[in-house]
Length: 198
View (tube, rainbow, N blue to C red):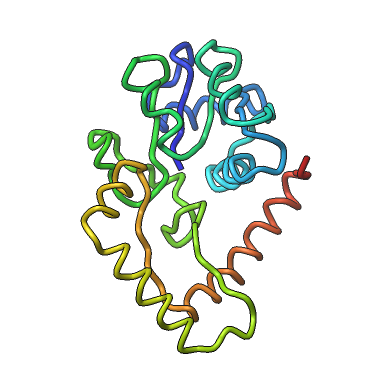
C-alpha cells in the first residue's frame, strides 16, 4: 500500500504525519473506497500499527475519493500505486510512503516506512488464485508451476513493477497458512475498528 496526501496537508513525510496524528488524535481524516473495503481495513491496520487514530471518510469507489483528496477535502488516502501515480507526477497529490519492505522502481527516492509495514513484511493486500476443494493434486501442482513461471517472466515482472506490487510466489501449503494468518489479523482489525461492509 501507498500513502498519498493532499498538497495542503502540512506533513511532507510519513514521520511528520505520524507525529501530527499523535498530537491531534482523530482530527486527521482519511478517505477509503467504501466502509469495510480493503483500503479501509488496510488503513485501520496501519493506524493500529503506528499507534495513531484518524477519522474515516468512506466514498463509493477510488475515483471520488481521489477527487476529494486532490481538492483538499480529505487529508490522506492509502491505496495501491496505479490509481494515483499520474496525480503524483502531475503534482496534484503527494506521496508520503510506501508501506512494503522495499523501494518502488516507480518512485525510487521514496523510502519504505518501517513504522507502517504490514506484519512480517508482507503486503497488506494479496492477490492469489484458488481452485475448488477436492481438485486433484496433480492439477494443483500444474497450476502452481504455471503461475510461478508466469511471475518469473520479464513481461509480467515489468507490469508488476509498474503497478508497484511485489511478486510473492508460494506453494499451496504456504498460501493455506497465509489464509489462516490473514483471517486472524483482519478479524482483529474489524473488531477494533468496528468496520462494516456496505
